[in-house]
Image 1: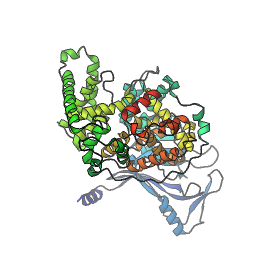
Image 2: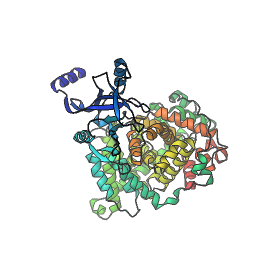
Image 3: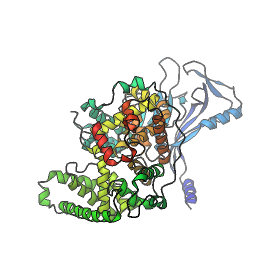
Image 4: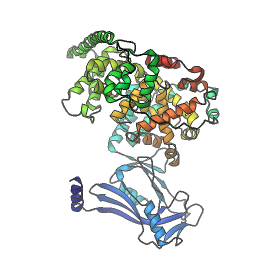
Length: 588
């Protein structure tokens, strides 16, 4: 039925060619000096607006550049018509304008007699072959394109034009009005990172994050002699091992680690955690297992002991809940901090995971429960209160627990792991960015060198990843799997950063081959959202860990500390959220 409807629509609404430019040649390959002439068009179709390039119908001609600088094309017939037809088909393309991320314009030197060119770059980081305009400038094509999308020339690279939208433009203007005194607090930076992923905000976000670095440059705590850039780029690492993910832990396997009283065998605890690390959990296990992984229930606690303590915790929850619910409107007039936090919670709950069926629709009681959990946490930890992004951590917990009390105390445990991400000075986020930079220097010196050359080695383009533990990068269910893997504390306390390294490592060629600058890197990283495969990333991150672990005698001491290997290692059985928090406190 859908196909029939599409066919009917296409028959009723004919394609409209907005502009057609002939004699636009596509380069056959990066190293080729041969160019196929063709036609570049912008076409309005029933399904959207498309940019298309097709080879010329005249298969008796092709271009060959006669000068070394890639100019002064002439027609030749060095290939057969069949070969030219095949070559043209290979580089032909049709792309929706909404898939366009940016494009590079190269203008010929004055008096060279050359031709202007455009290279279109897609949102996924791929790019089309360069298109050379033999008879016209690029301006007419760009003018027509601007009728459908908003364009802005990059401030860092005059030859780069970025696709933006009006919503982003408004946000960028509001961000640019912030004070320039260096006192950029979390309630300014975090919303700018979480609220929008479109292009025009990218440079503003970088500016804000640079302010963070300038405010406390000394947070580069680990740049000692062993960690200097020139040294680590010379480190030879062994090949990465080939690994694979295992099946999710089943209820039967989980129960095999239990003792008769409901507690867990301490001698097998690490093995159980490694099983969770290697495969995640079956969905039916999460309600039970997450309580343990988040420290709500203790591993050595019997069923009866936990039920007794849970009853006490339920009373505490209700007491704290009644505190904020009993605040009157008159009291609120003299309780500005409470009012501000209440407003932030209400705004965030209204927009958190609303595409997920569990939170979809109006008058959804699950939104009320989420609101109650977050407001009660404000009373539990009034010093920290509520900062945007906390709802991202709470919503999966409520989805799994389906109970306010259990969700709240699991949330308390999760915030014990992550609360430093939300502190106003952002010191812990900066620390993690520095640690990530150190790891990239070791694992991928080629990328590290490139990022340094583009003044992007502060790694602030990964800010959102670390802030909310990839919540905005993976689907809701993939996030559940990723988080339970991280909560095991295996195989090292900084595995979150190795996930960052694995993703960046996979994007190295796209970033470097397209010569992305600071702004384009951040935009590309944001565009990866919902296009990452969690099992592939986890496998790659684990392989990097084992690659580094095999070289521990060569690694700087602080890298060994991140990875919990060598002399810096602590007992694996001691790996827990509380121990990890203690280690992080020592770093600070």
